[in-house]
Structures are given as structure tokens and as C-alpha cells.
Image (cartoon, rainbow, N blue to C red; front, side, top):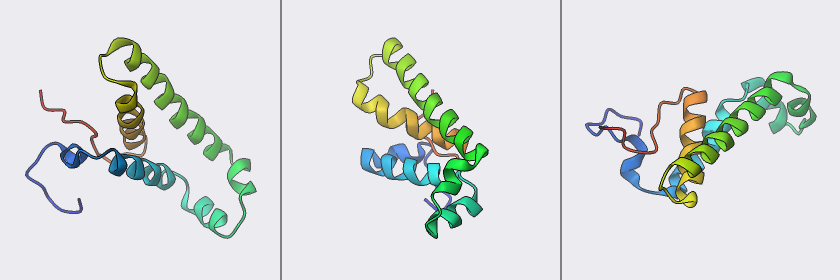
Length: 107
């Protein structure tokens, strides 16, 4: 991370659900407006709830991750415990344009 790498598998090389969960949380937070993050850091939690863009962001990000997880659970052989980590990671990464991959996408 933070450097050019000769591997194509991004975060998948670490093979750690803990790293994926932590990165998902921080990518989700980074997708919020910095002015809202500042207000929340000063104790103004109501500004986060009142902001329409933040509400839609939460709804779309969480809704998309839940819907894709449900669809993949029905259609794939992967265990639910792995889907619950990988799909939210990939969804939040895509929504925030972070550019990380949870799984190796080489065909």
C-alpha cells in the first residue's frame, strides 16, 4: 500500500479479513464530506443526520452492499462469512473510488 506494486491482487495478497474490515470502515468514513466529518469530530452528530447527501450515501452504500451480498449468497458457493466481508469491501471501494480489490480478479 502506498507504493507501486508488481502484484495485481491488491488487498487480496494480505489474505486478512481484519484488514478488509478496517479498510471498509475507513473507506466508508472517507466517502463522507470532510466538513461533516469535522462537525462530527467537534460533537455535532445531528449535522450528519440532517444532511441529505450523507443520508443518501448511507442508504445507497449499505443498501447496495446488502443487496449484492444477498444475490451472491443465493448464486454462489462462497460461505456467507466470506461474502459479508468481501462484498461490502468491494462495494464501498467502488462507491468511494478507492480502487482496492478484495479478491484476485485475474481471469
